[in-house]
Amino acid sequence: MALSFLDRERSVASPGFSRWLVPPAALAIHLSIGQAYAFSVFKNPLLALHGANGALWNLKEVGYIFSIAIAFLGISAALFGAWLERVGPRRAMFYAALCFGSGFYVAALGAQLHSLALIYLGYGVIGGVGLGLGYISPVSTLIKWFPDRPGLATGLAIMGFGGGAMIGGPLATNLMTWFKAHGDAVIPMTFITMGTLYLIFMMFGVFTIRVPAPGWAPAGWTPAAKQSALISAHNVNVATAWKTPQFFLLWIVLCTNVTAGIGILEQASPMIQDLFKGTIGPAAAVGFVGLLSLFNMAGRFFWASVSDYIGRKATYFCFFAIGAVLYFLLPSLHTVVAFVGVACLLLSMYGGGFATIPAYLKDLFGGFNVSAIHGRLLTAWSTAGIVGPLLVNGILDHYVATGRPKAQAYPTILHIMSALLVVGLMANLLVRPVAARFWMKDQTA
Amino acid sequence: MPETRTTSPLLIAAAWLIVSIPAAWGVYNTVLNAKKLFLARPPAATVSRPPAVAK
Image (tube, rainbow over all chains, first blue to last red; front, side, top):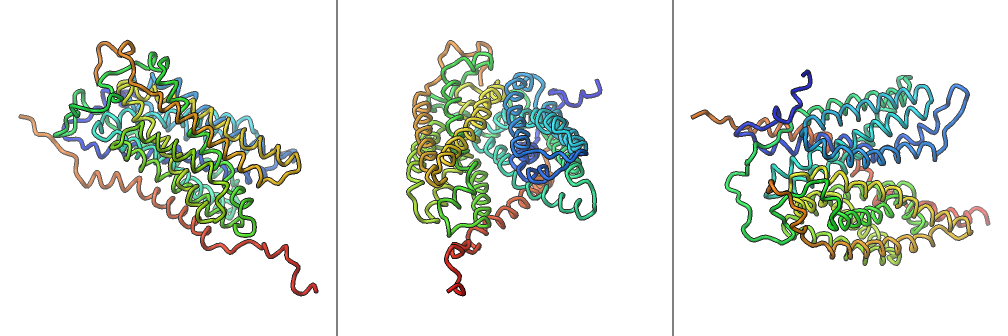
């Protein structure tokens, strides 16, 4: 078969292969697909794009492009997780690269023909499938290569997703400036160039990734004889895992953590300007958003690594306990330094929540089907991606409609986020080891 | 006994370099943006005040 080089058997590492080649492979995928978070740089250029009949798109229509992509991220991660476990990470990463790259090409055609439906199909649906496949594909492989530090390994990859926006944003801006200066079709050419660059970069990951040989373990490493009861030596199949109370509780944990983070991210720029009128202007607000991105990215690596030492449950306890207090206090902070410092800490915990969840799943359900289980859990992210902005924008709209200043809405929003974190705290406290009746009979971690 | 070929440290360094360069470029751009928070001059809160010449 022409694509047999993608088979799992062909990607088994030979003896002597260094596991330190695997994180760069995973990063190549995550740094690429993380571009999705920078899609907002295309908003204004798309709004300014005229159709042949002079028609223009509105903000709501353009906003759906990102929403569709994130929805398909969750759907494809949930649907294809079990398939990915069967065929291996290389094939899944290959299709992720094809979908993500070609999604840009279809979107370029849509921009050229002024067809929003084609952009929805390209960037939203096809690209969204690439996002979902790419997001989960290296997770279980990393966990198998780093059984001694699963948090650090998955944290590294998922940090890449946070960093992807930092590359995608300026890359798109620079490309659009360049094509504009050369009189080319700005958006179509930028989409085609980005699709090609990301396709090549992701292929580096495809051909670098390896799975460990059966029974492989790091030299000199033996599993700890005594460890937390929450770290299972047994595996749970994906079809069983998502019916356990633990899956349901972790779904709430992820959903509440992400919704609360979106409460700040969604309104970061206008919020700081409204709360510190006369002190913070648009330029400084851009700086605030940049700082939040840095802490969002760094928190992914930091907190996931910390979780290897203090445990996943304790890590999420920190997120929810500290987070609930800080969200509650945030509106009462009247100095820019205190407000920015607290917001940065909160965003680091938002990123940490994403990066620590694969290791939490591995602890509870074993490494056998962890990518597939992670894929299904990501529906919590899609849900939060819809609920968070709806909640924040709904409250802001209500304040504006009733003639009250927007600045008065932020305490309400942040107190609701604080309450959501208390719900997450309760869910996390209720997590117990998975009952023996759910374990697979013929597989051990 | 068959000889085991270990991965060259150069290959590992090259792989990390390939992903580190774009990541570092992204972080650099973000830090430049973040600096604006500390360097940007306050917006014209003063704008709401009556200009000096108006009296």
